Length: 430
Length: 130
Image (cartoon, rainbow over all chains, first blue to last red; front, top):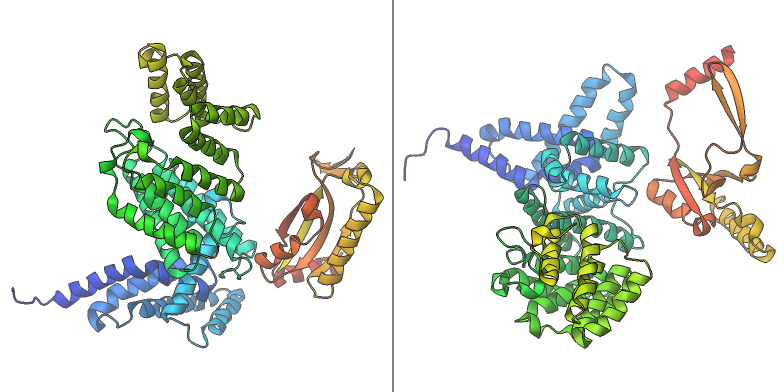
């Protein structure tokens, strides 16, 4: 062991500040927003609190409860800077008075009230009165602490656009009177749906889209999973959080198998199942069981149950299609969308044969509901090909190709057309 | 906070709906008022005449022009409003969802801009001066 150096205490304190920042900065922010009543003021106070920590912890030692220390320091700094401004502006007196009122009795900084602040922050950032784009940007920035640059890169946007979106969202929160509260029990199902919707959009952005910065997109799936874990921790009784977390883990478990090294799509049936992440699958399966036992289960839980059946099949041929078709019936009862109908038709085709599935898919397409959805035409093409109707299949793939926009999907469809027509994929007209 | 709830609906609803059904809707509006006026949430409100009665006024370069009809032709038209007092947007949304028009049309909830007292004083001073 080397001799302890003089500045050891200093570097230990700096490390403690960094640790506190990683672990606590969002929670401290969540509490400061409650105490100061404003996002921007709270962010400034958070910054000041950590600046104070960097200066003071090496001298006075790391406090026993860093979180409480940071909250108090942030609040103190905010009152201080408002007082200073108030000298120049009489109208600000009332703001300072407001702080003083809010500050007596001293703010709660026990773990339970801080958990409540976390929830306040999440539910406010995901308020249904904000648009999807605003909710995503605000949640990633304020709850997940991604920088505007990171959010911009992940969503193929520019930092000024994302920053503008966040500024507008905060302005709406303030001006429209969106409260910093946890929803009442009566509002909880609807409000939680809004939060889970944001989490799932973030996950899908990272998982489904294949353009953009791959590393940042991986961050998005991780952030979505982390956010769902946090929510489950805070609201353990909510089955749909379990369901969504399970769904994301089960999808993420196929991460390594769903693309070739060249970036081409590999269908579920053709994936090398040895590449699936068993740890994520095990956790996902346990969460599905928990989700389906909960008093309120919904669409995410049923989708997770379907993903679980795929995850449990040793080979594609051994997939329990009959159970999956049944779960799609349940899903239709919760969420009667044409896309769910399409998936159900595909499951029925696997259970009862391609002809049975084709009748259903044809009916959905004939209704015009999914006329512009490339996967509907691709599914139809696949069923036609299985029935030996090569020309009709190629025509349906051609239709899918005109609608598909993502490069890997387009290459996949082109390969299929090439197989059916004997043309080389690069000669397939698009 | 104060919120203005703007009720938009297809105004032909009022001409094409049979009387018994219209009476039922009117009864719902009365019930809404009976609940939310005494509670202090509804500060005021009115139904509007159809857009056929609307006149749009503009002044450009000091010259006034009037045109027949509403500001914009839309599928749903402004048919009435309520002024609400609510503790926050959540409460305002809750009450807005009880407006009968929300079931057949749409209700836009807009916060009233809070004007600082100093500005209000200025405004009343200038009106005294005029």
